[in-house]
Length: 151
Image 1: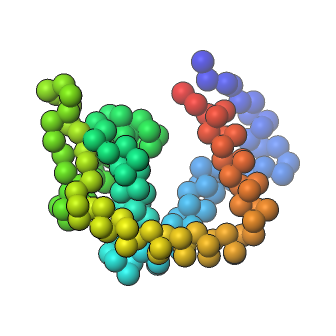
Image 2: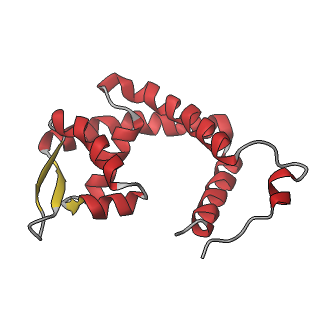
């Protein structure tokens, strides 16, 4: 059962603005940094993330991968289309006839290998800009928030 939030919590001193809007603005700003680095090979950070996650969940069904990524199946399918059109991922039959399994292709593995150093540079840049302590605090807050917001 979802926790109830007091109306006072939304308007209390020190808490201003929409949390969702602020988080989305931050993620857009951070994503832009990664996208600038990954543009050299024609990827966006969202695509890199899918490829990297597929490397760890190769052969997963769409449903299982969406669950692992914490995203909606239809959003995942939509985001996989350009990667499939580029030849980086392929879909095949899953263990059950009605399932679709997703795998990295050889081209997908190759582009992921070329992208990793670019991603590392972006990660290093963001860490330098925010500072190690801030990154550690941010990660802790994100992890704690994710735990609290579980379905």
